[in-house]
Length: 259
Image 1: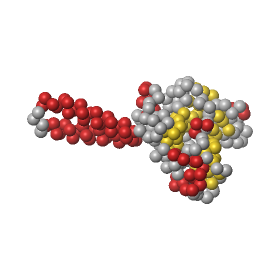
Image 2: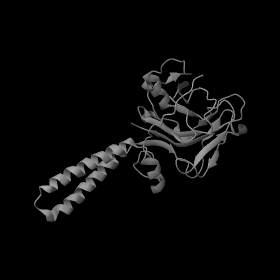
Image 3: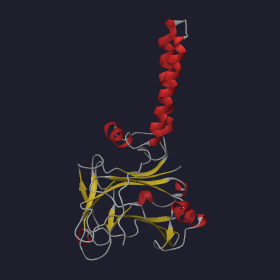
Image 4: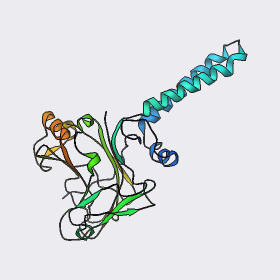
């Protein structure tokens, strides 16, 4: 058994599948702006371009055209920002309206397999929660069909999500993420358990991220097998239970994106 320290990681972009299309202007900005490093890089490029242009204008004699040139530069800066921030999202669940067909596997929710949908308190907006049955097992969030099937395009991409738990006492260790596909099971042990506030995770979908066959003590997954699993992905399980005792786990912002 080992305890893990909290570490907050970045998420991929908040866009719909294979499109640079915002879902909801307010919620998207709240989810997207604080966490997206590519947007920050784009903003930096835009600021650098803006400063360079202002320096150029100081030596420009034709002042009547200054506003026109400034408008062009701002437009280019905005294009840079959104091009940098546009990842291709293959599947996403933000739980803004309902549970989006996510389910529970393991000893939670009295065996119903159905999580509770919460309209407020997410990261932000809606989210899912589930209560442990305290029967000694470990329960997991189980992804719906839209995350499964041929996910070959996700190789070297990211699986990101937000978790929180009701308590950080009596923590225990277990496989944190489990992928099933092509008659194989691979697992990943993340470096930290979630806090009682929202904790963001971003996991690379490739063999060099530390994925193992069957359990944390298994052999390292090969590149060939990882691609075969993604090509026939049959289940994604994300651990929801971290306390040895009664607890409540919560999930939000699950995204699979390509590189």
